[in-house]
Length: 359
Ligand SMILES: NC(=O)c1ccc[n+]([C@@H]2O[C@H](COP(=O)([O-])OP(=O)(O)OC[C@H]3O[C@@H](n4cnc5c(N)ncnc54)[C@H](OP(=O)(O)O)[C@@H]3O)[C@@H](O)[C@H]2O)c1
Image (cartoon, rainbow, N blue to C red):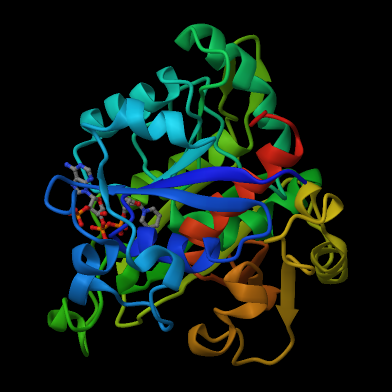
C-alpha cells in the first residue's frame, strides 16, 4: 500500500489527541499537518495542547514540535501538503459545514467526526463493517461539489457505535422496534474528571442533541443509495434515552428489540460470532479480528474491563435474554473516542484508501 500524507484538523481536542496516538507509526498514513483554532495556530503542538493532553501515553515524538496551522485561514496551504484530512472541531454547525466543504473544494477529502454533514444526502456515513457500499455515493457528491478528488465522508455519532453494530447483522429477521438507554462517558463531551469535577459521583440525564442523533442516524446507515443520494431507511423504529455517567471512556447501551420474525437466542449468538465485514475482508490495519464479542458472564461486559478490546475497535455484548415486552434485551459497549470517534474515522479512511477513493 502506498503512503498517504494526512492532516488533522482539531488536533488539540479530545478526539484530535486520539488521532495523534492512532496515527503515530501508522503503516499507511504520515501526519504532515496539524491544525486548530487561531488560539493554537503558530505554536508548537506540545505548547498548543499543553495541559489539555489527556491520553495515557505521551505526545508522540513526531508531533511534539510540529507547528499548528490555522484550520480556517490555511485551507489552501494545508490542502497542498496532504492527500486528505481528518476533522474533529468544536465549532458552530454551519461553520463546520462551510469548513469541511472548503477543504473538499480545495480537492482535499475530509474524513469527519463532526455531525454537521451527517444528514447531507450525498455524504456517506460509514461503519466499515456494516455499510461500506455507501462509499459509492462519492462520485455523485464530487459532481455536486465540482471536484475531482475532494469529498466529505462522515462517522456516525459515538452513542450508536455499540448498539448499531450488534443490531445491523440481525436485519434479516426484520427489526421492528428498538429501545435503547445509553450510559455515556465524559470524554464524549471532550472532558476529563479534572476538567469536569461535577461529574464525580454523579449522573446527568441529558446530553444535548444526543437522543435525536441516536434515533435518526442509524436510519441513514440502514439506508440505500438511490440516484445521487442516500435515502434513509424507514425502520427500525428507534427510541433512545442518553445519560452521562461518571466514566472516563466507554459508552454502554442497554437495548430492547422487537423483530418481525423472532430469531432464537442461538441464532443471534451465532450471527454475532460469525459476523465480519469489508474491514476484516480487506484486513485493514485498524480492523478488529473479531468485531462482535459476546460475553457469557452475567456481569459482563464492563466498561473498565472491555472498552480497550482489540485496541478499542471491537464491540462487546452481553446479557442477551428474552424480555416480557420486547423479544430480547441485551447490553453492549464500545470505546467512544476509539471505535466511536478517531478509531472509527481512521478505519473508514483505511477503507476508502483500500477501495481507491483517495487516489
Ligand atoms: N469526544 C468524543 O467522544 C466525540 C465522539 C464523536 C464525535 N465527536 C465530535 O468531534 C468534534 C470534536 O470533539 P472533541 O471532543 O475533540 O472537542 P474538543 O476537545 O473541545 O476539541 C475541539 C477542537 O476544535 C478546535 N477548534 C475550536 N474552535 C475552532 C475554530 N474556530 N477553528 C478551528 N478549530 C477550532 C480546538 O482547537 P483549540 O485547541 O485551538 O481551541 C480543538 O482542537 C465535535 O464535533 C464532536 O461532536 C466527539
